[in-house]
Image 1 (cartoon, rainbow, N blue to C red):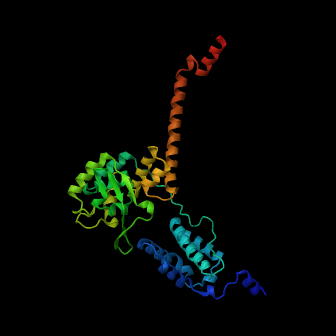
Image 2: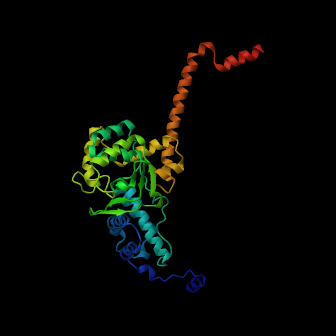
Image 3: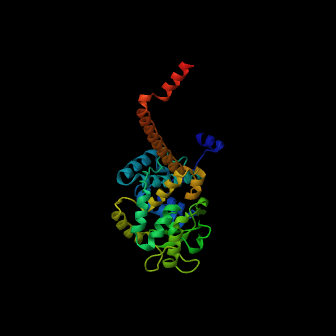
Amino acid sequence: MLKEAEIQRGDWMNPDGGMVSFEVYATQWIDDRVIKRTTEGLYRSLLKNHLMPTFGNRQLGDIKDADVRQWRKERLQATGQSTVAKAYQLLKSILNTAVADELIRRSPCRIKGASVADTPERPVIPLAKVLEIADTVPERYRSLVLLGTFTSLRWGELAGLRRTNLDMESRVVRVVGTLAELNGGTLVDETPKSRAGRRIVAIPSEIIPDLRSHLEQYAEPGDNGHVFIGPKGGVLRRSAFRRIWNKVQIAVGLPNVHFHDLRHAGNTLAASTGASLRELMTRMGHSSTRAALIYQHATQERDQAIAQALGKALKGARKTRGKKGSGTQRARKIQKKK
């Protein structure tokens, strides 16, 4: 009777549907996705290293809420929270599709906030230190540092930048692609992650002379040549540049900063100019407000610091003029005379 009632309501589900192994279903799930190669590489890495050891031999219908909670707890003890959040989101997406395919009744991934990466805010590199870094790196990478900071381009966008993307007369850079380095070391040209990633960013005129000099001395020849290349003329690899960066950050006294922190510094500077949320999103290449709000928040904190400094100055001024009476006291005296 129960089965018939479920059939009439449209709630009946074949009990054999959930007997598919997680390994088979998850692998096919990735194979069926139309995604970038970098994303596919990330998914397969998360699947292999974080999901398969626990769920690989389990049938979809046997994975329960408690199993997911226990898995997450163990993973958090073994690796970083950001990685666990990505692995959980992948697991959740796979099992949500299993629900849509009517293989299981509901997803066991029901931990609130578990798919949100709790990434600590990176330190802001002071502008003086940015200039020191630019003066310390080998000359061929000086413009890489300047452009990465003052146009907020990501590493892949810089590595994939072509001469034709730089308009020196109009002082803009057109971001239309990115160079991705896969886990095996293969380099692939890809489009930006989102439509917002395809953008035009204005370049401060103060770094145009540096860029012109760089194009003359170090860039790959031809209109479609890469702007930034390695010392032997090959494509610029993050793994190779990291050795140079490690030496530079120690030389300038910032041993714990990443190259990506230059973009963070540039975004913070942009926010401090009073740029609107939409302007920050456009410049950064973000389609959501989340990242841009971080920089506006930082600006608000700085504004509070300015207000405190102004208040301190006012307090000192009032103290100096105390013997002559405060503004309020003088106003009361005037009222009495009237």
